[in-house]
Image (cartoon, rainbow, N blue to C red; front, side):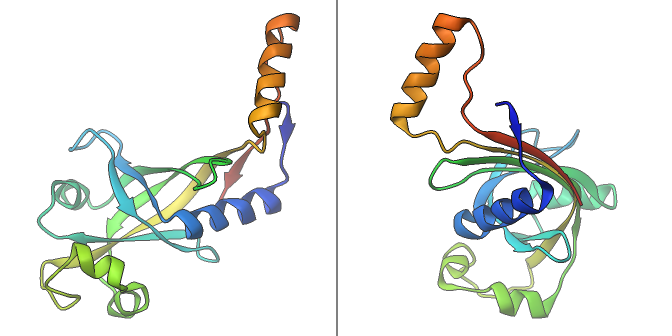
Length: 167
């Protein structure tokens, strides 16, 4: 990847991918559980935030609360597999009734059967610091061509763009 997207275009494509995909892998640095786990993100672009529903008694939230917040990573691949992104920021519990109402849906309700009034249910807010985004618009023909060319020229294939976004 030899090209670099400008910040505005990269940010627009990133947040569109988050809104379209919603699901990614969330994990905290140096905490427990050590593995990332699938979570549904609700993005607030203007504030540079991601929001997640979670039960208060989960390992992830206990670890976040034990340190008063935690550095976290949220990684996703867009549905069309053109965008690969990893976002970093500070994760903390932040109960917000208005946001619960705003983001509640039949999909969310499927994971939290006791409803939004369940006292165990809360939200986490991830205040974004930065993101790395890779965009590959290479379809199968271009991919095959770039791989063949790379093997002949001993140069890396050119399959798209990348950007580093600071929030």
